[in-house]
Amino acid sequence: MMTAAARPRAGRVRPLAADLARSEWVKVRTLRSSSWTLLAAVIAMTGFGGLLAAAYARHLTPAARASLDPASYSLSGFFLAQLAIGVLGVLVMTGEYATGSIRSTLAAAPQRLAVLAAKAGVFAAAAFATGLASSFAAFFLGQAIFASKGIQAHLSDPGVLRAVFGGGLYLAVCGLLALGLGALIRRTAGAIAILITLLILLPAAVGALPAPWQHDVNPYLPSAAGQMIIGHTKFTPPGHLLPPWAGFAVFCGYAAAVLIAAAVTLHRRDA
Image (spheres, helix red, strand yellow):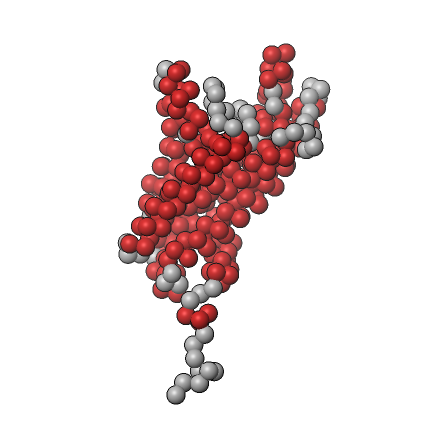
């Protein structure tokens, strides 16, 4: 008769969420590309944003001064930072498929949806922390540049904190979208190509449409909707766009749809 001491504990059979999260954090932290890619995101957000702010400040006209949102414009570096975060998000999934280590991961933790959730949660937290730190740095650098022209925003001004935190939120959801594409496609080049198409090429293609069509389509594109949480940046498309939180909700919807599709395929297909 099996004694109480000999009975297997539930935790020994099903890995706990904390164990999965710890395992995924070790993978992200030890991935050779992680630190460099996250550093590239910080440099892109801060450095590229500062360059754009300096260029805008040099050619500031009275009309441009009246329409300028100095807080949001200083965060325009998100345009390049999203690519760095997106590439890393793809690699978090496709790297394991490329090396075959995904089989070991799923053998150790057969609960595939829990594994995907752990990967998504850990990477989203890392992307948000990186994005938030670089957003604050870009904001303060941008305000130092605009201050020379007598324009400056403060964190206590309406909408400013939302814009700065929005930079971190946008990059976190962008990372989740990329991670979902990596899980769905399982090939690094293909997933990155689709990500670039969604975030950059698709808006450029819509920009070639007649103006009435642009105004109807632009608000619901992933990048245009998502960046409204940041505000009007260098890369905000023209026309009437969604309110900040509504646009961000649409962006989250894209990421959720891709992650759900990835979860279904991960559950049904062999590793």
